[in-house]
Image (tube, rainbow, N blue to C red; front, top):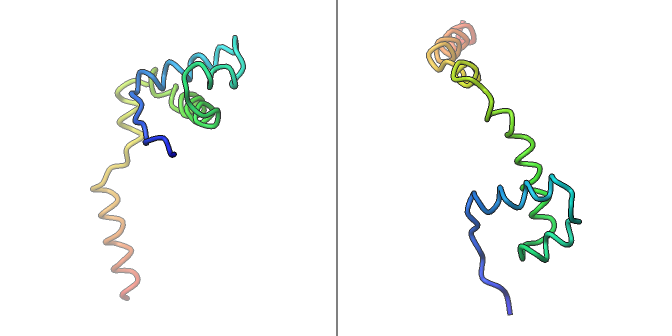
Length: 85
């Protein structure tokens, strides 16, 4: 019989990913300890490593990462006019 789908909290996922990063235990041992699949632990660990830079980013850096929609819409309009002519 299939196990029902589980939704893990962000705190739980972070706890498991940090434990995997420490490297004190093997992924197999962590999977057994936390009752999750070993591939899931690897995914959470990868997500943690990819997003860790965002923790230390300043508000200005976060804002600069978001493109200015007004400029993009203006550029699209200009390109549409150029295509029409």
